Length: 369
Image 1 (cartoon, rainbow, N blue to C red):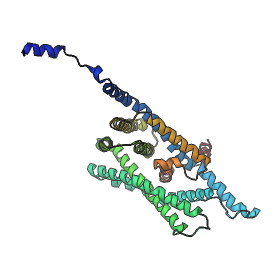
Image 2 (cartoon, rainbow, N blue to C red):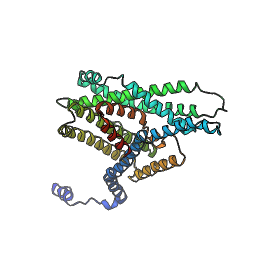
Image 3 (tube, rainbow, N blue to C red):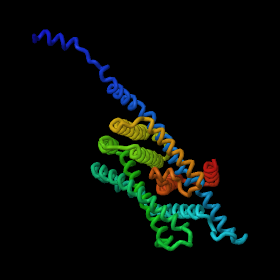
Image 4 (cartoon, rainbow, N blue to C red):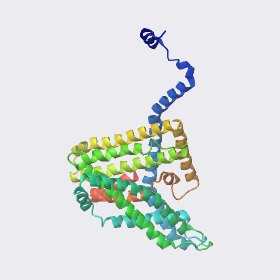
């Protein structure tokens, strides 16, 4: 017989019978554990990848000048000992000289770009317009990075291609000018990004900085609901590593410019510190949330990030064994250090004034150290 009391009694005493769906609930529990492991595994991959980017970036300032010097020394002294080889220079040495010449030419070209005028021009724009500009710059940076590596590789191959082969290119000089133009334009684009970020830091109400950070969370919407395979997730992880490293360099440039404006007052560094931490924390939070839900929706375990680290380590070792002229790890990540290096050299030389013999000695000791 149906009655209200019997219905209430049944509702209060009935069980859930979770053991009947043991596999289902075990899988749900494993998903929770996977989401809990994602931050640790992801940050281990990010930490390793950022150091790989740093290695490729510092290579431009440390080993590349020495390699260019050795290549030029070989080019000058080899005829004195007789030409034993058909090539004056090895292919790797040709590529090193091309990199060095591009770096020097673009550095002098950057002197014609007025940073102060660019800063005040951007500062005079409205918040919404700057928000749109910053989004456009991010898209343009990815496009430049994608096409720029092809331009540089085409130059290196054209300059080192065996002469016996049939000519199927437009020549080394046109490729060289294309590479110089690319590095110069990409450096200007990154400078505009850094200037926009600097304007956001120096705005009174911090509204632009808040909008720019909230833009990172829009990235979650465009990623988590898409179908991802392991290879696609690896590509996105590499892109996130490159993006985070670039943002760190942009923050360094912003701090240098601000410290110069305040005569290198250490107290002003503590004024910038909360904003820097806020930008870094938002980047980390967005990456963690994005990867956690992507792995959840696509049934990917957290162990895949260990495989990604192993793959990057294998690429690093193999590139060293093959004596590759270009770091295959940075190519995989889409990270091109030349434009960023040109901009950083330009900012450092304009922000830090070196005067006197003692100052130059300190610079040399710092470089050698």
